[in-house]
Picture 1: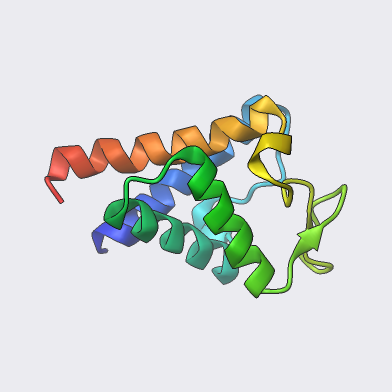
Picture 2: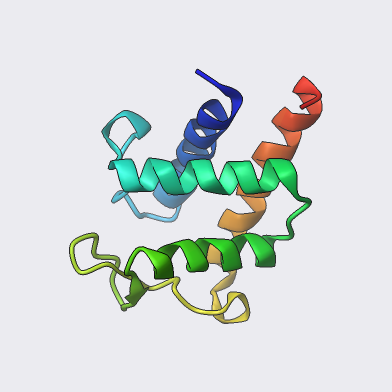
Length: 117
């Protein structure tokens, strides 16, 4: 497994654990996650490895990826309808959702610093 894939899995699992702490048990384990979700995580990791992204920039890139693949705002996350409640500008996100972008960045930076990549 390459670094991007390993980091994508780690970031996904950290996000899943955080969601569970908030009472959201909708996130599937990495092994069971749909391919589009794995690809999205991998693209996020690659972006963080090549740029010093802020949480705001990370969220913007996530939204761009979602937009390109047909997602839009919806009060409930629905993979079939491609709606997501976090499909809003970063400043409109609730604090507990902003944390996800900080966690993602922290995981990537920590491993990047440890591996020197």
